[in-house]
Image 1 (tube, rainbow, N blue to C red):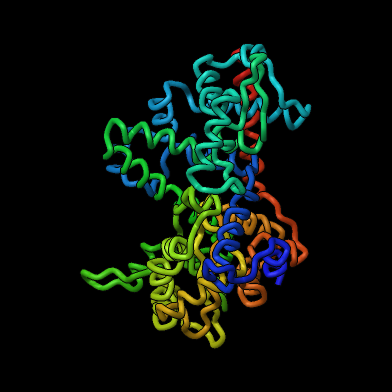
Image 2 (spheres, rainbow, N blue to C red):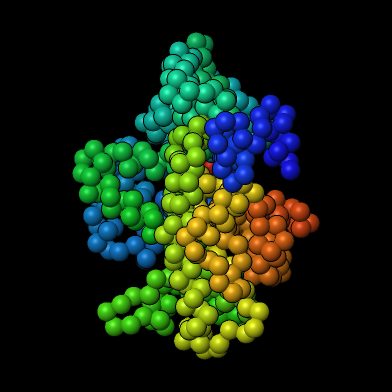
Length: 444
């Protein structure tokens, strides 16, 4: 109803001639997707911890040795190879700008500020070259983006690329500190390295992408294990290897999702995708066929097949996996975890996902609750709830039963709970910040 009200205020009917998707005008759905993406602004503790676990600690053991060797180094080593500066120095410039904005409200910086940072000047120049532009360059980038997408309403990529303006006075003006943080600690870093590797050896770029996919899946698995594999609840998270061992046949591997979690009468079925929204989605210019394509890629095609197969395997072969048969009333919660830059969850996406699942005859079995998307940050928020003694399995099942079209973070708030960071994430954030600040002090 709220979306229909927004349509009315915008002067558009639920079907304004461009067709409908999930029961709403395609144009409005496209803008809703773009709006959700725009509202997922930088969260510094999350991004710093993500940079620590993804870039600074090296590849996790789940990355095949052959893949890591073909990529040619750890993520931090590859960043330095691509840029000729250390990742820590690059991050330190961003962290210092954030500190000045957070503690003192400073958003305008003279050239002398960067001269006094005590960091490798090449790193400072790289950061400013990547994140800043003069007004002429920025105007040209914005105009080019608007012409390319045919709309100015959600054309913010140019500002994300250049969130700092170099003024004629040789000062630097921060337009939005969140965009600065994203430029240094977000996916732009990944694209910088990938672009470099692709230029010298596409095989290395492919290996780098494969390693990051494996790393993201490993991070999701580690989060699940922190939540569920502890104390008397040990052995509640089962990965693909465990499911293959339980259900596989000689010469034939079962089709499963990435993880299942035994929560008693509730089972979580978790699939992971690294799919991020394309520029046309970020800019609010998707048409119906493109919306379906995005939904199919992250949820209602191969992912749904794997989740559907897993539900059937659990119903008839649970004892082989965990030593007990399902009890009457057992619920199965299908979830796909996306990057924060992936497709957002809302009522319209939920309705279309149900339609697509029914069209393909997927996930309609006994006890299977409505499927959904959760972002990586949503999963971390769930981890923080578990630290306050929330029963995660029950909470997720209630969400899927009571408000299946509501985004997870909205449901948390509606349930009277707080959106927090898990304790380890805050410790990691504080430790990295202290380390980077100390780096600048010692260099000074």
